[in-house]
Structure formats: structure tokens, C-alpha cells
Length: 330
Image (cartoon, rainbow, N blue to C red; front, side, top):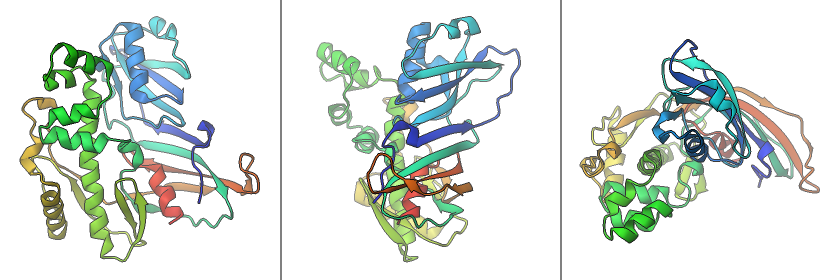
């Protein structure tokens, strides 16, 4: 139907944020990367600077198969040492210093420039909102399944799906110490697994809710998205140990899905690894698509006989550009 990310230059993401610069102990850098995972870049920076990973802050993970720009904070490091960093496919620009670290969610949004390829024809209508689903990047191959095992305290089953040298080395020395093995992983990575399962449950809840509006269904690896043409104010909770509901119909759907999944709210309290415990929080059902622009249709230089077109737009933090494209072509 269409091809995305055929080359990294087809998918460009720029973080939108305002940094308050002063004489603080956190160095801010603009990280421009190509075909690199955000977590891996943070690990490499920490390694080269001989720091702990938690001293490297960033607002969110950016797509690997793309060209992305985002800001990192580095605690207690001077500009001269940053200038000596050398990471493949990564450019680092020192911005200044500040008093606060950059943390998850600490940004306004993201700007996207996306080339859509392999088109037979182009019939794209401008859109100004989209259902706020989590897309495939959130789930990877096993992320959601690992997250479910973690909240169910099935640590052995979680480790079966995790391929990490340090964790496997730990189990080789300490058989059956699965909690210890998990603690060898980056805390951000392990938390990402729990977030992935929460995101899957959220997607399932919203899709079921929107089916009553006769929306259009689009398949993805873990189920189906349902898109509608009507926008309304509603929030759906990311399920946690303290979940609140703004709508009784949503509550009924959540309870049904949780029964099907065999989970309870209390499962999100993980005493063995307390930092993985998750409260519930509300997420808006719809997100605005701002500054939508459609470029001119051109011959696709990588796919003979087909067309390509560039679209650009801005989304607030935590929303997925690929969901916008799914709605464009559903």
C-alpha cells in the first residue's frame, strides 16, 4: 500500500522544547542520530564519560530507523569532555548548562518530516486530529509479553524473552536468580517493558470503545486500531495499581479486558522490583495534528513506476506519527 522508512532520510523527527540555560551542573547537548537507538546512545555516552547511565537524561526514545534530533542532559560534565565524544552515526552539539536534568516526558512535542513511498496514486486529505494509539515502535517483538510477565511476577518467563549478555551471565553464575538478572538490565529498559504492556491494554480499550462508532479497523501486530471521523473529549486510563475512570463505559471495557488477560490492578505493585510499580494515569483519546502540510507528488526514485510524497506535521509528546499515517491511508 505504501512504504515508510525505506531510507533513514525518509523519516525525520525533531524534538520541540525550550531549555532554560544558566550556570547549573547539567550540560545540555543536542543529539543528532541516524540508525541509532536512543537507549544505546545514552549507554555509549555514559561509557565514554565513565558515568552511570542514570546521569544521562532524555525526554523519550526516538525511532532507530530514522534521522532524529533530541536533547540530552549530562550531570556534572564540562563542555571540553563532551567535545571528545565519538559515537558512530551520532553528532553531538553542546547547547549550554542548566539546573535541571531532562527526564521522560519533559518536552512539548515533536516535528515530523516523512516521505511516503511506493504509491500508485496520492489521495491524501488534510487531517487535524487522530486517535492517540501507541504504535508498533512501542512494542517491538516481545515488549508487551515481557511486561505482562513482569507484572504477574513471572520473572523466569520474562527472562526467556530477554536477550541480554549481562543478564545471561548472571544466571550462569546464579541459576534461578531471575530478579538479580533483571537488575543487571538498564532500569529504563525494564520499565519500558511494563509501559509496553500498559500501552497494549490502552490500545485494546480504546479500539473496543470506538467500535461502537462504526470506525474503520486497521490491523497491527497485537490487534486492531479503530479510527473514527468524530472527535470528542475523553480520557482512557493507562492501567496501574491506582486507576481512575472518567467514563463508566470505559470502566466496563477495562474490567472486561483485565478479566480476559487474567490480571488485577494490584498486579502493578511489584514489590520485588519496586521501581517497576506503576500507578494509573489518564491519556487523552485524541491528539491534535498541527501544521499539517502535503508536499508535491513526485516520481519515486527508489521504486520504479511509483510515486512518493512528503508530509510534515507536529504532534505533542507521547504521540506517534505513524498513527497519523495509518489514518491517512485507512
